[in-house]
Length: 226
Image (cartoon, rainbow, N blue to C red; front, side, top):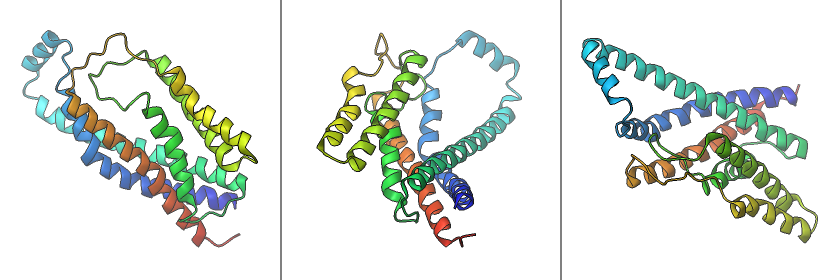
């Protein structure tokens, strides 16, 4: 069963990651490129570079765009494989049946814990948006994801009402404490663009949990036990 999980997770992660990467390239990536136009950094230096290298800039831009796209696809595939393996491992240790249908609730729970719950305090941000210190945001994000996952487990697998109450408390606690916020709420990015990016990013996060998981579940269900 372990080899089926590893193989199925790899198949689902690669295939699903490529699908989500393609969707990402036409939804969130254009917004990121658009937002970068609002960033103003080292204008004088950039102007000098533009004058000196104006002839080579077109070719370099095309190469950089291709490289960026390839890295985006690679990162999405790696994340998808990691998510699927974690999800399948949790299902295996719980003794749950693994197929294209049964993985969906687990994938939705994974998205809720690692995507939706943290986004309630730290929404996906575009370049140029104001933000608190990176370390503080990382700590809060990790604590929120872990607390939410533990809370969901307590709610759905707890033996009595006390477990359910404890799960609700765990899920709510990071938001009661509050996510770290920047000292000044300033942004170079228009609010409409930032809101659209946050919404699209959450959809992408949901897809990167669900699509690879469904493919992996189907692949595992079709594999013959060794």
